Length: 445
Image 1 (cartoon, rainbow, N blue to C red):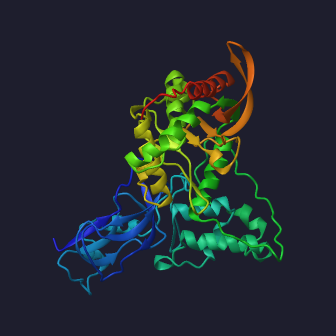
Image 2 (image 1 turned 90 degrees about the horizontal axis):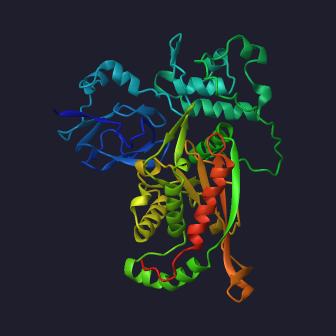
Image 3 (image 1 turned 30 degrees about the horizontal axis):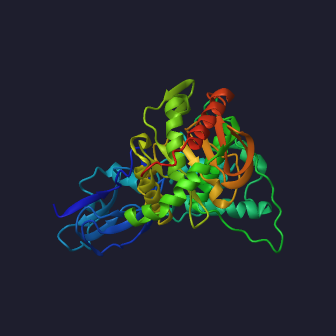
């Protein structure tokens, strides 16, 4: 076959679609097999997609900004090494049925944004599920939607078009093309929301001064904002605090860090030691390692620890250490260093951001002594690690009580009160502290 399809690859077990961020090659360019040809964004991570075959990029089927389902065609590659100038779209996409090629040119519904909204044809104009969902959330009527100029194929309204319109509409509310009465006459139709779903929070009117700067959220920040709001709405958060004496850990790390760096060419941080204690406590209290599905509790067998990492952009990402209970302290240290580095370099794979069952956030790295972290759904708990500080403490000895300088830190454990009561949440974080305080000074790594 002279021409082959390049399809949207599967980039993780839970990834069903991706958004075309940019094409690194244009039609007519020569490409080699495994050479990066486009950049795709999923709800987990942005990644470059390599060519499946070498040859010429004859036709691009999915435009930038479009949401494409996994397995749908995104380009045609001519493996003979020459592009056919007169090849029609139907001819170049011959290996695929025509309806599939047509579907690939319009955004697919997004699991986190589109819900169950169906595509709609109004006259000669097609609206994707994503566009309809945004219109419904922003109270844009169908008449108003019809007036929007589209930059997509055949004049279709893209996600970028409607978001730009929403931003303009919010900045100049008096310039709205439709009165409020029209919004009530013909709202955007959508499937009924589940009974457990709360209505969207009303928008707060924000005044803007002459000296203020307006900064648009990037895609990752918008995703973080949506998920944090969703988590607070879904889970009744409760936080328990425990102060732990980690003097033995500090003394041991100070003694071992140089040897570790010489032997393994990496830094020995406190984080893997804390994760080890968390894993041991989860084994003691396995009902912390669960998820909620309606009225069912899903008890996880694997212990997959998410590690919150702050990015240079100011955003936050949570890579996952899968089956952390199968790693010793050396393995955890190597894994933590590797994931943190690749997270900051934007080199993580989608699967490395999926499947977490419990999350740890080291707020102490920013000098914070404690915090009330927000649960990462569908998990039911998250632990924040505070800064280690020297404090005077009363110690019991065989000769009586004495005051000594000790290294102490706060552990802040937020949990979902639907399934984790105060007794379980409190005992769990206390057990983590117990393991930290019992750390062996003579331990090897």
